[in-house]
Amino acid sequence: MAKLVVLTEGFTGRTLELTTAKTTIGRVDDNQFALPEPSVSSHHCEVWLKGDDLVVKDLGSTNGTFLHESQLAADKEAVLKPGQILRLGQVELRYETGKKQSEQPRQTVRIGEGSTLVMTKEAGFGKKSNKVNKIFLGVGILLGALILVMLALAFVNLGGSGT
Image (cartoon, rainbow, N blue to C red; front, side):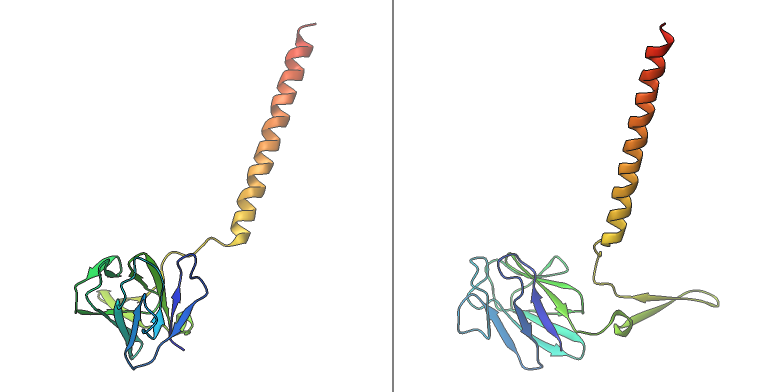
């Protein structure tokens, strides 16, 4: 199911399941999805599905509607792709379709005779895996211990050579 997932602290865990019908988002309770945050206008924007894309229309918001960090002009529509971020004032939401990465749309680009490059739209930079962090920590501890042993041996040799 396609949805908008709120990423901003204080609203995390809140989601809006999307349909092809227009859904209003804003600060006040008469919206289909209310975000009681001062930077969100009372009636901030409308969203609806069009295939796998999410169409967003700003409703003349005070603090702006941003797609890909570009501000959407008032009463204008723009398309958000799966994995991209929508920002309403200071509140960030990620558009998710629930499809696996292999199911996301791909773009094929010809780069030379007989060569083809297939580009997959990514959701952005991912977090390093915990395994990678543990490896770096282990290597750092090992190097630190090795340096301490070498320093201790150097001091012992210096102290012993004076007699």
